[in-house]
Length: 518
RNA sequence: CGGGGUGUAGCACAGCCUGGUAGUGCGCCUGGUUUGGGACCAGGAAGUCGUAGGUUCGAAUCCUAUCACCCCGACCA
Image 1 (cartoon, rainbow, N blue to C red):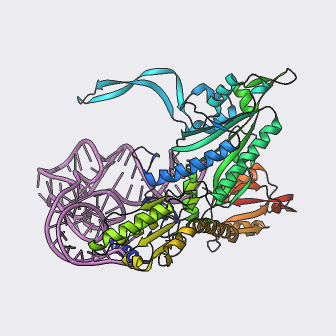
Image 2 (cartoon, chains in turn orange, brown):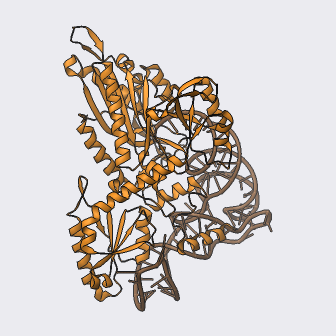
């Protein structure tokens, strides 16, 4: 039975139904995993929860990294690097922070291995050289960066301190999923220290804005910006701002956060400066981060049943050219045209980069190569064969359209509009994702309707936009009942209006966004 | 960490009930014919059946333990 099903699926694939099985509609979590594999982005490693990021996946990360880094530099930040290992005692300094991360810390207790022979005569390496103070592998770096800041800051003239680091961190997750939740992940963490509360608040806001802009313009993700409820706040923060996206199973995903830390960490790490009036004061700090989770978000937001669909701005290759060589005698002429076109396209610019063009001249069946690039999500595929040479055209297929939707364009015309076509794809992905989110965001005013929205199988679920005046306990109860949480308290004025809380009936002055989340 | 499920070739699986030492499809390699939608023919390589014990003349198959993965929860970016 299962075998028949399998063969049926393969048959369907060959008949051109979908390249990925199961489809999104059939089994979204399985579909996600299949896309990650089919697009050759990453794989699970032998170490639980840790992934191997393959070249195509890392290529996406490099683009994200490079573009964000520019934005950080443009807003006055500098990169630095801090240690992977943090003294355990540092974590203890801020009570809430310690409590929040204690359950997911990897701990280093020894610094040496010794060879021993076990009962069966096997030679084994055994940890020895116990550390007097255990070290933790950073789950985040507030504490160790705080320790550095306390050395670096003496005067108000040393402020603001605007630091970013690109690093890996580790949180011992119980249920890892590639990109979305891995034990080790790559991210950037910004850490800043300011003279005044106002400056720190502005920084928190500014960096949230950078994230929102990046996600909109580079990742083609419409995001809501807002504030987390107390329950969802970063451990140790005074205020947590977030960008929240909707993906295709209508769940919410937190794509990035920016925290206003008040003076909590300054006090914990003793970051003090002498102010303009000569008095000794604690700095005001912020931290903000985005991770490889964004790649998971992009997959879940844009990919389809044929595989990954990459927003052009983060695609490792914008265009792949597939030579069509029916007979060996065509090879020279076709390859000449292919290489000439590639060279020409590489002179074109798309935003701050030259076009990244790959020629796939592997000796494989054309259909196989074609589908490989469809699954990898390359924005534009071009085929050039002998017939094109005669006519001076090329066959162009866009990843945001059907694989059958092939346009035959004069070569020069395509070259001149390549960049604008990429932008059109980029914008189209954004529009599509936005329309999806709007179609699945519903204003809800009664408890019955709210429960129905998330519980009823015939309802699609999504973002419930509702008035709220409940307590933290009410929020917990809702989470227990429906697995639904307040995703964000949106900044957008459109959410401001007088009404009554659907849960408590108390008055409320704005609607919040509720959803199930990753 | 709680509940459920699954571990057999790179991938997806069959075989297990009723023990006799491993198979199918896709993929991979070689040769040929092909090539503008996942091609065809022929030949070939590849698995200590998750791991460790046990029962047995004999274990992929039965028993025990253990590990890993997946799904659902709790936790989280």
